[in-house]
Amino acid sequence: MPRRASFSYPRGMTATIDQEVRDELRATVRRWVEREVLPVASELEHADEYPEAIVEQMKAMGLFGITIPEDLGGLGLDLLAYIAVVEELAAGWMSLSGIVNTHTIAASVIMRNGTREQQERWLPRLATGELRGCLSLSEADAGSDTRNISCRAVRDGDEYEIAGTKMWVTNGERAGLIALAARTDEGITCFIVEKEPGPRFGGISVSKNIGKLGYKGIETVEMVYDGHRVDASCVLGGDEGLGRGLGWILGALEVGRINIAARACGVARAAFEAAIRYAQERVTFGKPIAEHQAIQQKLADMATKLEAARLLTQHAAVLKQNGERADVEAGMAKLFASEAAFEIATESLRIHGGVGYTTELPIERYYRDAPLMIIGEGTNEIQRLVIARGLLKRYAID
Ligand SMILES: Cc1cc2nc3c(=O)[nH]c(=O)nc-3n(C[C@H](O)[C@H](O)[C@H](O)COP(=O)(O)OP(=O)(O)OC[C@H]3O[C@@H](n4cnc5c(N)ncnc54)[C@H](O)[C@@H]3O)c2cc1C
Image 1 (tube, protein in one colour):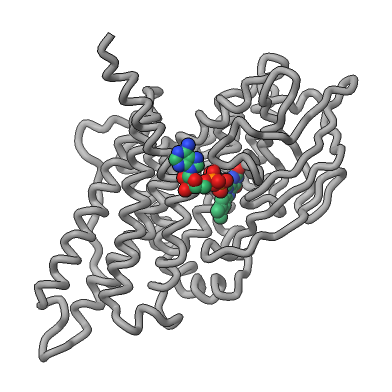
Image 2 (image 1 turned 60 degrees about the vertical axis):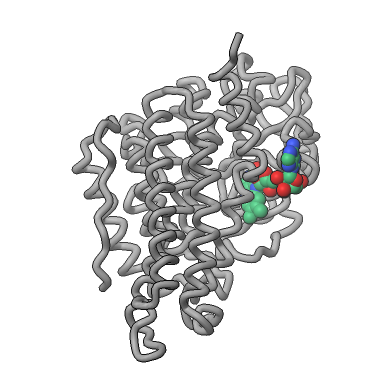
């Protein structure tokens, strides 16, 4: 087992739970990933096979309820604990962090914006993983341009009838709960839609399982709502939530962006650690390639980017956890960490030479997984717009 640096959180970063508890959780998940995930990750990924057995173990560890309060059945831990777990999962296999991610965003939007009754109705089952959540915001013509959502929910007595097609729903088929953005008379509203896992339920059907470059083993689907009916009690936040769904989901996506940044740190760390190990083993021109200065330069740049990415991610998590504005910082963390992961995965592939291009090693997997972080939860072009808008507000001269 390679010796690994231990990463602690910078001084001054306050959090709601002890550092010790957080470190213990990280260490437990890291050991579990090394034992249960790493030996099978590439095989399952190449087969595009859903990791049922691994997910059962994740449920047993409570990983679906990390940030859900204890009185609602979760572990009641903070965002710093969450990002530590996400980094560990992604360092083993990025898709595992994807299984937890949109689930956690759905839980987060219920936690923040649901009525107490709605929290009690859904959060305990989400916390155990008995009910698995997903987020359905995007459509074919509403990715970056979220205001262009056309999926519609029309009130009919005590119910709403939903019609439209949603795209890119990660976990969509296996989820039992969807945080759905749909247009109502008041604007875009968030509905919490329960369904049976599977390709068809009531008026909802999975019309396409989208093939992907990486991020395999977890489904990302197109879903059609053909007059699907839900009770009016599924409007998040009750009547006061009508027309407020987009703002609430975008707020929860700040957590999503911090999550993507943590995920990027995980993939980047795995790629970096593989590279620094290989550089000491591989000999060319009579010495390990780690002794060639050109390789040392790469390793130094990779480690520096990784460390900076992790610090930005932790900083954004602390702000968000403390209830402070984190739009700029979450955007910066996501932007920097995802670009760093992409660059570090590419450099790791270069350092591995020909063998890095083969399916014998996981480097090609990191290389295929990394670009998703540049696109998901708002592309990096959009992150720059979010960051700039936030900065212009903070630095307004009048
Ligand atoms: C594997 C995968 C999983 C996903 N999972 C989910 C999910 O679970 N739930 C969900 O709701 N969505 C999900 N998404 C959707 C994802 O959030 C969108 O793909 C993303 O927001 C980009 O939208 P788009 O694909 O429509 O690209 P577009 O918006 O069409 O963008 C195309 C290009 O134009 C650029 N661009 C667009 N507008 C501007 C602008 N104003 N200024 C500058 N550049 C701009 C973009 O940055 C990009 O480079 C997923 C996507 C993928 C690929």
